[in-house]
Length: 137
Image (cartoon, rainbow, N blue to C red; front, side, top):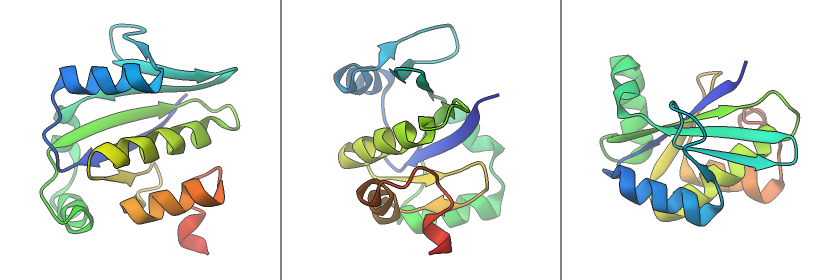
């Protein structure tokens, strides 16, 4: 079962702009009916979907926490389904870092930990393979 990670942005990202970004990043576009793209490197995989309806599934306190880290109201939700293969989470982190260079965002992982853009960049720079480690340092 893939591990979900939420990439949440204050930008109102249009599907066509997101598809262009995925294509520029080297993702396989529309690998199935659910996902907008898939990143693959050997046996590492991350499935990606622009799904703003997911924002409705967050509790009010979660939205408030996200808005504080973003310094704005969340408008776009990107779902990253990360395969369990070791190294796949690093692929997801790399994608999230590249995404954050284009759009303001935070990352909300499956352990309900929230990462700012700076914390995300720290993960990329240190080469950490898993979310969750940065906050325990």
